[in-house]
Length: 79
Length: 222
Image 1 (cartoon, rainbow over the protein chains, first blue to last red):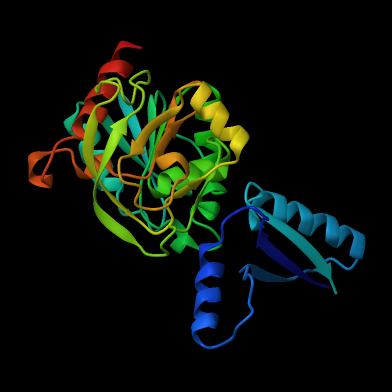
Image 2: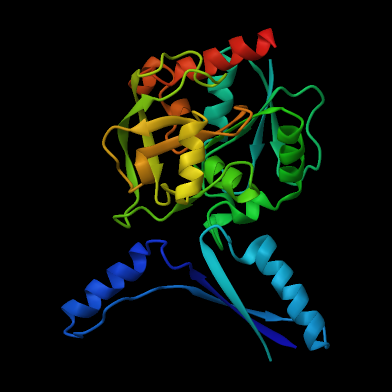
């Protein structure tokens, strides 16, 4: 069973990397980009076969390690 | 005074920190990250600068979950002293021993230069060797030193006199120019600048030496 975790900076936390990408897009002529937020995607290959259990475990992983919930939010997809 | 300096793969200020502590009169043990316990009778744990685990995932995140860090947290929970410098500060925020987090520098660049700091409180064992309001010069060398905390945390830090150092000329975008903070019991200090790299005249300055001398003096009394 595979899980995909999206980690993003929370709203209100300045994302200087996203801002740099936004400026670079503007200088390439891509007008009208009002904001860019950069996050990360983490894919996990799990031995677990029960979707609910997998979700519970991956959520615990996010809370303990994969995200820093002071500044980051996360979402979990199980496939 | 007995100090332990934790060594992670990628630590690169561990020896500098050990030498600074030894010159101030401490006995120093180096402790490898896979060890699960600290030497008996340790008064102070030093969490050094560097790039533990290659800064993978987030700076300090992997180190904060290493076996020895459980002992570091237990030591702090019992009222033990912990000093985290640079990557050590990042690790201490990731363990939850200190509030807030260090984000990428606002200008996105690694910054390596001497900076001026104002000592905001002398009411800690770490800063007892200085006077409140003293300005000291120590180097910074980091890519992720942009201190961030929410408004409520900042109010708490200010109200409880827990900001140890502020930058005079903010080099990294840190909120309220914060360069270092202490825990609620004032026994855990995290700071981005490197006092151990300004601790003897061959370093080009000695403004950092008072921290180690003050620490040894305070902890020897305790």
